[in-house]
Amino acid sequence: MITDIKGLHHVTSMAGDAAENNRFFTDTLGLRRVKKTVNFDAPEVYHLYYGDEIGTPGSVMTYFPFGDMPRGQRGIGEVGVTEFAVPEGALGYWKDRLAASGVTGLAEDSFLGETRLEFAGPDGDGFALVESADRGRTAWTGGGVPEDAGILGFHGARMRLRDEAATAELLTFMGYTKDETDGDVTRYRIEGGNAADTIDLEAVSGGKAAAQGAGSVHHIAFAVEDRAAQLRVREALVDTGYQVTPVIDRDYFWAIYFRTPGGVLFEIATNEPGFDRDEDTAHLGQALKLPSRYEPYRDRIETHLPPLGA
Image (cartoon, rainbow, N blue to C red):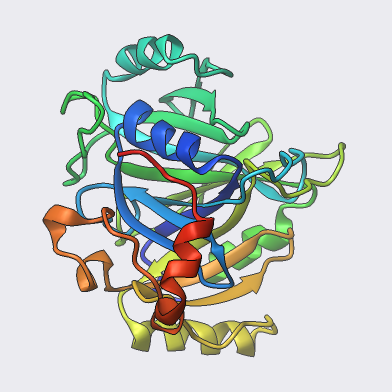
């Protein structure tokens, strides 16, 4: 069994309009844009990162806004809901704030004793706010969000799968333990990591497979402390039969990827070196940062990128 995984690192999704995506996460949700860079494989497209003050692993939602990309089709074989933690007692504030901002899909429910508020992002993304103890985390209070209501980071994520057994076996191998089941949803939790420590598997017997597009989660990333831990994880996965990519330098972390039995793309990302490797903390996310191989083409790339606003 793998013992190096520390919970979630980040979640990466796709979007349509870049400015609308930026407004939603910085103004409506009050997160901080901690990095403005480009898709390393398609530099004409932004890669935008939103999180807490420094982009702590376990707090960062990232996006590839592809402009006129059609919306994804929700279904089986995807991360259906990305969950953010908020302080206990904060959901009343968020229900009013999101409704006033025209956010759709608002629905209150509970799961395993936790109070939740589900809502949709600008491209139909599935999100939930979950009341939680802060567990040592400090919210970033942008967009006028008060400190006692701000998003603390991720709570976890929920995957919709036709047959969850193989993914449950994988999570167990990755260090997660089975928690409780409520209806068709079973929770898995990892101990001794960061506070973004839950994965829920929802068993869905019928329906169509998900089709990726704007509003779809592209991949979900799990955190390890450093490159040595990442190599141990990679070796264990390969030995178990998974097809894992070589280590890829993403400037702010190193990454490996593999496809799960349920069809979801998993990443293992290092906590090092962090988002302050090329910007000081006070100015994170302000300047366009490019991988070194794209610097000679900065002028050309900037002409293709739409303005984001503040």
